[in-house]
Amino acid sequence: MTRQILILTAASGSALLLAGAYLFQFLGYLPCQMCLWQRWPHMAAIAIGVLAFTLPLRVWAWLGALATAITSGIGVFHTGVERDWWEGPSSCSGSGGSSLTGDLLSTDGPRLIMCDQVSWELFSLSMASWNALFSALLCILWIMAARRA
Image (cartoon, rainbow, N blue to C red; front, side, top):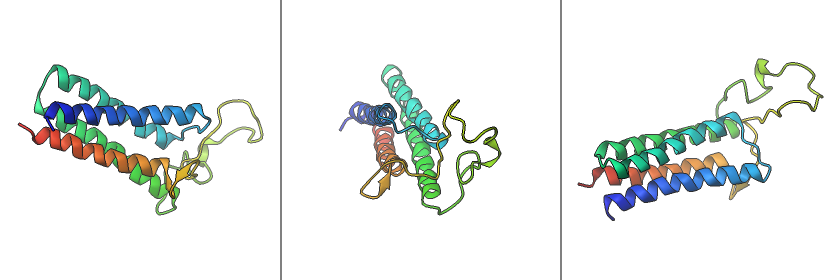
């Protein structure tokens, strides 16, 4: 595979993962705070992919690898929070920390989605787990692109 095809495949992979996240959100699976954190590096990887085509410098591929490694790492951390391997941010796991104020029975205002609750899974892997896995594969593609002459 050429460097351009690897970059196109990796950036497109981030676009597909991001589209999938928004599709699940449209279907009613609201994202938690850590789910939202996982989206930002994918957005960066897409932008990096565009820049890699306009300014063909090797550094862009390394930055794409970094972006997908970051989202994969957040996905691993999120998976650990969901499986009670470690504690997550107090603002979106456990009791919700001190951010839950006011009348808890009120239906007004935004709904707090807890980061330690799995809302969907396939083959015992949550969305965060799938993101971690696929993002790691995308990171490998970015590294392959960076190492091409």
